[in-house]
Length: 252
Image (cartoon, rainbow, N blue to C red; front, side):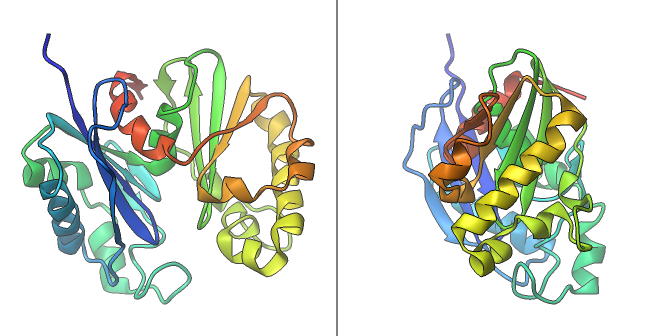
């Protein structure tokens, strides 16, 4: 039986990581990372990912995770890649025009020459951790908030929960994002994470909530005990491992 390998690329606001996985998500190459270049027009994005792929073993298919709203591989909006120097810097109108409506899946498939899926990064992260039973929610904590919903093995259409208002005119993206974590410190920031979970639990009535992303490790032990038995903290490595497992999902 042929063993299917997947090139998995996780695109973040600060860095882009890539590796090659076997069909169950085991890494077959040491992950490599480059800083996200800015400004980032779409042609540079494609070239950056292609250069990463060229440094890794050849794979039969590829998965790319992007921040922002992605529908059927097409970018509806992305928060970081339209800026001059990265998150929280000036938005460049010419980049907004390039990125909104950009068929990233078709572009990467043409560049790599293999079947490719492009999804929101939290959705790929979730594919690496879900059990595949019941309603499962995935939240990733990093530059902002990533969010994905799974019902069994089915991935729901993407929702930008990060843009929902919370309080003081802040969105969730700002309320628990990296800038606020640095400003408040881990203890106060962790309390915000607990309040977010408590506020969203009656909205979704999930069977299980997974919290991942690079900043999940900063949640304090005191706050961890308050999150509840239906909440699981998962490693950030799921962002790459999900690159193989996402091909097993049903996608609406």
